[in-house]
Figure (tube, rainbow, N blue to C red):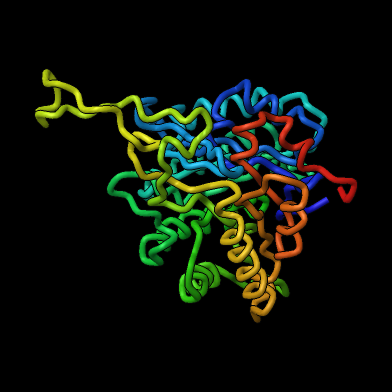
Length: 345
């Protein structure tokens, strides 16, 4: 069993926030699997994200267990997820937690989101029990949102959001908070984000605390491209463009050769695995060598290219306490977690 603050995760295997954890049925299937130690919802916004299935989609590689996607956030508003989670957990004796993935680039809106989750925790008595069954993961790393670069690449953009989370944590230290981070590729990116997180630490009595309990490494790698012939089914995008460039009424060009209609998207699965391992390893080393005991307690959730049990083992060897997957879930359904499980758990 792995503890993320007050969340107890056993086995240490979860889904990452993704399109295959979008609705009530998917969340229930994930929760009822004996091979998941926790369930993470798809990332919710306060009022829901405008999803267009002709734009927001996924393509699976035919050459490896990889994928590219152009998904944004969930079309369902936060209130819908709170209703589903309450229905899922109420009356259950299981301690299996649900991690509610959230996002906002606006601190006042993020305050409302966290307050709504805290109200749900109060209704379920989550703060008063020995363990918690609800946690928060702030997604700061989706690469597919137009005109909204991931704030975790820019400390000045990330700091106001973390200040909101810290305020909630200092009011209620039973709240478990994590960050979903993007893939980093050079040293100062790691140290910059940890410097922002370290600035949140506080001494209370004889102990030192930090609001962040875990880091999820990593989200997808943006600006990635696959051609249609590289994907399962070898189909091309069904979004031809008008030749006359007037947005309609003209002769349509040939179908796009690209796997995604965007055509760029976030790379995930096996092709991301080495970089994800490197991110987990780097954060593990930096956290363990920190002089701040609160940072040393931050756990890592390793995500990226976890497509077989050997990949799970590699994530643990790199320093992850918990391991998550999405691409394999998208390809195989909930049975993916049985495929990933080993007797080591």
